Amino acid sequence: MSNSLINTAMSGLNAAQVALSTVSNNISNYNVAGYNRQTAILAQNGGLGTMNGFIGNGATVTTVNREYNQFIMTQLRGAQSEASAQSSYFEKVSQIDNLLASKTNTLASGMEDFFKNLQNVVSNAGDDAARQTVLGKANGLVNQFNNADKYLRDMDAGVNQQLSDSANQINTYSQQIARLNNEITQVRASSGGSEPNALLDQRDQLVTELNKVVGVQVTQQDGDAYTVTFANGLTLVQGNSSYQVTAMPSSKDPSRLTLGYDRGNGASEIPESQIGSGSVSGVLKFRSESLDGARNQLGQLALALADSFNQQHREGFDINGDPGEDFFSFSGGRTVNNTNNTGNASLSVSFTDTSKVKASDYRMEFDGANWQVTRLSDNVKVPATAGTDADGKPTLSFDGLQVGVTGNAKKNDSFTVKPVSDVAGTLKVAISDSAKFAAAGTEDGGKGDNDNVKKLLDLQTAKKVVEGKATLSGAYAGLVSSVGNQTATAKVNATAQTNIVTQLQTQQQSISGVNLDEEYGELLRFQQYYMANAQVIQTASSLFDAILNIR
Image (tube, rainbow, N blue to C red):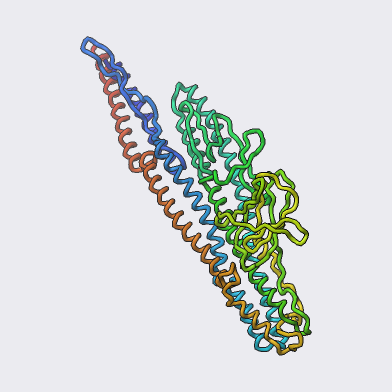
């Protein structure tokens, strides 16, 4: 009988040790990211048959369970991926907002100073100091345009770098998940199906981190290996195999990187519209919407200011009686060939009416018979008027632009037309001699003639200089307002999505998280359980000793 008691108590001691080890492991991993609470599952051993019926034979640990809810985890990952996209977008657009909304050294104050000093020339057209000051303020304004454009170009380069870094992260996570798939399968096979909880936690944490970079979908094969896909079904991990993502030049604009997918046959470009969540999605959205929009609005403003000023400056005469020259210089528009084009056509762009030019890029696609023009800022099909240039070559005119076409296009060939994206960065003051400032309205007006500079000053308040509807200051205010609205909306969306993540994390942690108060209670409970079984052993030993002492 004492032997039976000892065996029964020993099973309890062993069960208590496993339970205590499990609780101890929970406490130790309290601050470990991705750890899921574990629970020792105890069950009774089979009874021992006797003449008096079955007698209990102690306890056993059937498994150490990993407290994990796949449904909630899938919801949480989806919310985290969207939150990562919103956060990434908000972080980027906030930088543009900070640039434009600065209360010191803004383009608005630069334009105001420039026109304010034109008033000094109106008051004293023959004063060389006043003319020199105008040139100085003009150079200061130009520097502000150049610096703002450089800031945005640097952000564009930063997006390329971030996409390259993200591709490396995706590949690293995918390789590690594939390796863990293999390890988990092997451990399960060698242990008779026992769950390798630590490896499962590591794999799920890697999937979570990968999901924050680019939204993924996870399916499980035969209860073991994960299959991880993204971008509407492209496989990143399948069993113990992983596939590569690369940052590659975009076919639409080789100066920009985008993600490509390589399953071993060479990389092919992933349509950006298929990447719907994760930080990569937020970065791509920022570049195509906010960054391009800001650069184009900045370029549109620089173009309207420079060309309208040049036109009026050419109407006047300088201090020597010579006709006015261009006051500002700037680059024209440019076009970018799609690298998948099969024809030999090339496009060029020029301005026909800068007051009608819009702050947008355009996509021109040849359908086999005609060119289709889409304005990318609002995705609207734009009617284009066909014509010919002075050399008899075909042209298309729309939105204050004229696009010349040479060579032969093939069906589905496409081009991106960028009329204003380079204007702000190339803006310069074209004259350096104050005597060449054309303040006079007539050839023999002399030093006191200020008729033309009055008209130049009037450009500050002219209502249809920018896109035929706005003043120069109004256009800049529109740019600031547009970026400000995008930033405010992004902040609201990011905050709302973060709150959703917090709620789901709370729900997930209520199942999988470690509560130190609960674990401390379990520690005391299993400690008492252990001591009680030890007491049974002591009792059995006393009984055995009593039997021995009978003789």
